[in-house]
Image (cartoon, rainbow, N blue to C red):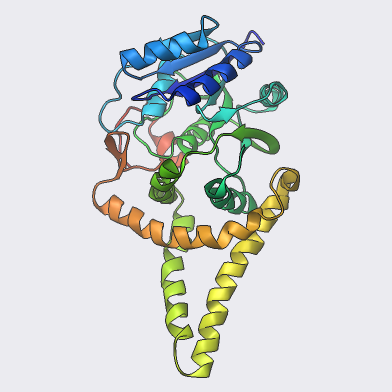
Length: 337
């Protein structure tokens, strides 16, 4: 499709030969359907190896160092947009793996929308991917998930693009489109594969993902209540008196069993049962316990000035739609909220 572009923001400090070979093969395959641009902020020697791996069919746009207080992914997206003119843009992280049918469908969905958000599913599914899938299912139960890829009309963002001074860049992008009067569509049954991170990266993401809840105050308050409720239930469950002990066990069981039921509702919503295995919801209690702890660690990060991210620190998770409207569409890197 001549009017569409596949844009991959990338920034790596070193080369993993296996990961590079997999990504290069994927990008060459995508380039058979769409022009592919990699906005590469890696060091020069790493960037050269990247470009050599994916060959002449993939264009590389050189991205400079992200300024302090800026999200490097957004800096890359903005650089890629500045270097191209295609009216339709698919932005994807380096772990996203579209097939051609999904690419066709996400672009077709832009006929009735300004921003389209597919559903990511981890392929393959090691234990930590199943753990993180529970978060996806809970998100689906209450609305939709935020994955690693979107498609949008260039006109939906306007010349200023979207703010690079935020941690939750996908939500910032969506709210920027809404603030400009655009239509956002989450397609729950448009499933796009995503490679899971390694275990180390998975562990690093726990607090960062919890920090995203600062952009969603009702969710943040709910998550902050988890640890006190579960702690009180645990204390009561250890009491000698039978009644407090029963109440404590019942309270803890209700929270954890409720998490499974909520996740299962998310699994079944929007055709998800065909893409998430029947056991996926059983990981929800583990995720709830994780979030009960990590959201308080995120609060500590907030009080300490923000969340460390790729060599910088980001305090703002994402701006509200009202804030973006008030700013009249002139976002710059490093703005707080």
